[in-house]
Length: 265
Image 1 (tube, rainbow, N blue to C red):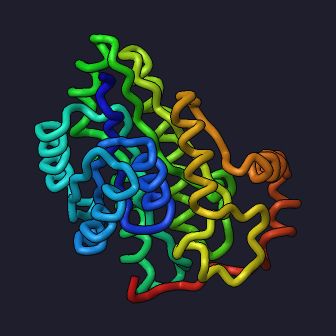
Image 2 (cartoon, rainbow, N blue to C red; image 1 turned 90 degrees about the vertical axis):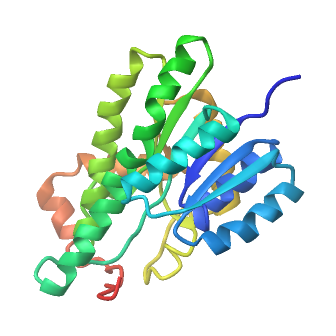
């Protein structure tokens, strides 16, 4: 009898992370779920077991807390074995303006979670995954970036910068892991219907429901693709924007609507 798939997901208490957990639960996977709201995770875990998950371990943590992730990774491996898939999904977003001193803490927090959080999530799993891959067991690392990392958006210096850094970081990691046969998958979502996007005061083209996005993400993860924009239409838009000369891009986007700032973020 084949052992169930083992999947570890951060940011699993809402949005894309929650949708991915539901998807893999329906596949009968063993799940490790990490998020700051452990009480929400615990209630969610009971739901997942009813929908088919072979087991669920919950970890209340902040992905900027590397020791907490180290401890949680060790616990998951001891309980269930080496995960086949680790998804660094946790992310935060807020409008920010560098000119506002009160936004500096928000900028630091966004970079800590969205960039450092990727490395803190993957780091404690890599040695075990390398050993597993050496015996022919497939493993992969997955990072959730954003199309916001392809060109800087007005009023979102921190978020755009964090996602651009995430894309570059994941590419570097992909090159490092290649020799060990461990694919690193970068997924850059467009607009997904989640709590993070519901406060955006502007049109969001090609919006996907979270469950549909999770299904498409899982297909990319299963293939081990190096990079994918989901939905594909946003990938076309992003490529076109990347090709625009700065003068034209600036004229088009300088007065675009801004995501609301959150000084108490």
